[in-house]
Image (cartoon, rainbow, N blue to C red; front, side, top):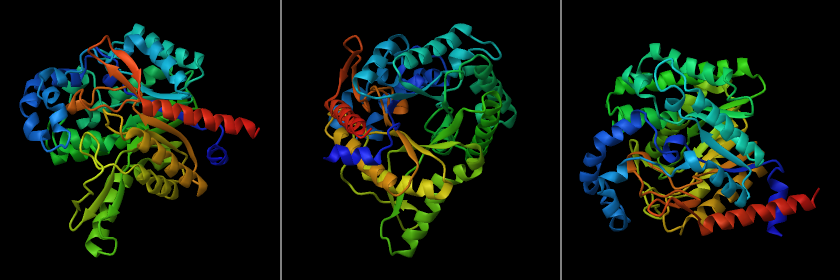
Amino acid sequence: MKEEKNAEIFPKHFFWGASISAHQVEGDNHNQWTVWELENASRLAQTAHIRLSWLPTWAKFKDQAEEPSNYVSGEGVDHYRRYKEDFDLIKKLNLNSLRFTIEWSRIEPEEGKWDEEAIEYYKNYVRELRKRKIEPFLNIWHWTLPVWFAELGGFEKKANLKHFDRFIEKICKAGLLDDIEYVLTINEPSNYATFCYLLGEWPPQDKNIWKFTKVYWYMTKVHKRSYKIIKAHKPSIQVGLAMILANIQAKHPHNILDETSTKIMRYVWNWWFLRRVKRQVDFIGVNYYFSDYYTGLGRRDNPKVPLNDLGWYAEPEGLYPILLRSWAKFKKPLFVSESGIADSDDGLRHWWIQENIVAMERALSEGVDLRGYFHWSLLDNFEWAYGWWPQFGLIHVDRKNDMKRIIRPSAWWFALWISKLKKAQGEQE
């Protein structure tokens, strides 16, 4: 039986989970993103046709994308209040882990002033996961900044890094890591620096290559300093970070220009950051969404199908080569900390997950030390500058009907697959 073969390949204590981030699901946050949303919602709605009408799905999402409220996170999906209900759904889906974030702006709403109730909230959040035997994977920072920190210049200034150090020290001393065994310091530093400072599409929309370079460099310092503080507090804890890594390939494998562009892009996008922090990671989180094909002098030329709702070329099996390369280069335990697809009709998600599983089986069979898979996302969520219309969730959230949670068919399939896997593994005890 296929499940028996799976059981031979996947470790018994493999983590099957989902990922979320605080700002995208909690609701009622106040940070640099919420300020920016309110300032830019009308502009984003008015320019939606220019920016998005090329999408094959444009007709379906046009009305929502041209509505200013689409670009305001507002009450989110009310996860801040309904997290216990969401944890029960995690159990229903046979998942045993959750990757989540804590919102810095809740914990330190003003410089040097701590909200003890917020700290206690997140400690209880972890307790509730533990009660249900769901392993908590804490990702400390996922792109949002307290307003006061953003006004100081955020990560643009080296002098500001001490504020993040203080935040890390606070969560250590306050006991937020006491019941945590796996922690990721930062999420996708390359995306953050690129969209904020190279492309200028995210707050602070400061298109400045010098600032991009500084911020990206300072992100390596942020991780290293956080690693040192956390390990000094709790030496046994496993510390990593989540990197968005693309399966970058040559469009024409024997063309010297295509091969050269591919090697350059692999180094710049995938490996530059990791090479600088490799001694300060106990594991690497791989966020996988993209297989990109390069031709000529760094021009991306991807196949035209299949595409997800955002128009991204979808190649779920591309997870295999990126896992293989990551393991070969760094020999660190790997977790797929994100992988998912924007698919409101749920027509591709089953396929995406199934092909991800095959890719992981192949990697494991070749000796890759892969220890977990976290699907993005548990819930439909606020997708940053795109707003609410892209839907990545295993669980659909009907925001017009009291935030009703609806488990998608692809998620039920995934839950059944995990159940069969566990049964087969149990039979081999």
